[in-house]
Length: 619
Image 1 (cartoon, one colour):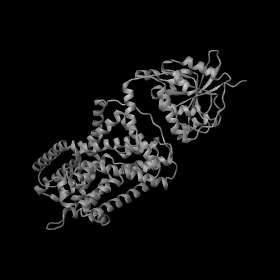
Image 2: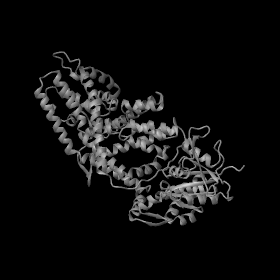
Image 3: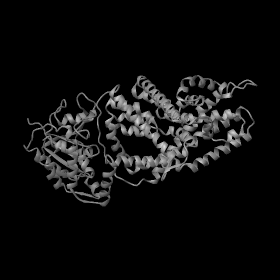
Image 4: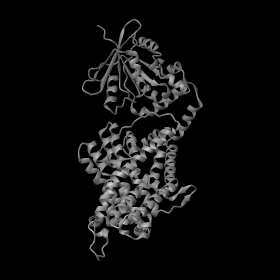
């Protein structure tokens, strides 16, 4: 009895494979797992015009025959006849997205080179036409040397022609499987795919040509990196230039609330709690909400326009040089908002060594919680002056701090990949979305969500930490007639004094040592902690209470100490939530403890080198 022909449906993710499979097989489908793996096997029956059956198997989407996940490995093994319980396919149906042809043809060329009977389904031609792109299937067929059938799977267009093409391929005209070309041919295939895709274009709208022209710049290894750095530079300049007025407004509200509370409440523990603990403590963090929203405005705009994916592509080459998978970019990018979702996003990384490396360096990404710390120190010690046309010194310093965090993460990744997470890195491919104008409503909703998240954090974690710190700073009180500072006499002051023995060699004072302890709950608490300390120390001194936190810091800290404090926060571990999610994602305490130890050591060394260098330079 002659075996039923086996045809494999294969292609890149998002090419419409599943829709085509459903359209060809209808309800005649079977689901199961491949032997020895948990990857789902989806097969079905289709019939030719004369009634002959064909078994069609829908393979997981992949970008190449070099697998980086169990799904992709199954696809490779089935196509090459290596999968247990599967025979070599008699033919391939390669599904490509007509509107993203050059990216999909690269894998198609790799498959065609195998020598199996092949037909290409040029899918979603209706969407390509809608976007102003018309392709010539016959020209594409001549270039590829295999039949090309235009299809619209969701509308069942082109299915009869596809069956006819398959019928002709399986009618005794079977070629033998040839070895796949080596990986060094990747760039050659990509260039050939681009050439063939351009040759198949009949008409193209100016907008698509403009997109291609822009991509030639933003995806260029040199020009693209310059564009990315320029955008980041403008973003950090705007964080300071655009936030001055709203910050002054919030500071005015906080000062009015403090004055009202001081006037309306009798002198004592209640007034100290409200003024020193709540208004001055929490208010010192809330004042930085405008800067956080400006930062996220740029991030949301870059995501909505389609540029962020291109930035990921640009960074892929750089990360590959330090042994980090390109798949790590999105989790690391998420860590700029918060390391917790960034670490959770590493679940998309299939290689365990790549994933672990990404988890361990995610806290080095400068999360939004660090921005209040950076802003208050930069505002206090870096002059608000211009260093060039449209270039503010404060924004430049903030930009350099973010760059320092990125460079530190890449250096840590390289060291980790050479030691504790040794292994080969795996590259990745990605689809480039269309450029589009951001929708104002979506951007406003995104900003509102970030504001709510920040204010909830200020009203819960930061508030609770500040209240606990206020209690520790307020009790016990020094006895009457004592010349000892209330802060030094308090529980918190004594703990900070002991910790400062370790921190003093890197230029830290008692106030910094004290602020570092509650900052483990949330990085922003370092600001509220300092504000609470100085508010309690000021007591009833109205002149001291009227001074901003920045002014108080200027009178108590040296510039080398301030710079060392910034360097510490670039590298120090993030909040307890980050450590907790690392323990959950790594199923134990080994790697969270390793992360905390190496990051604290790195932060201590960076702060010490910064302080000693700045002191030696006479700053």
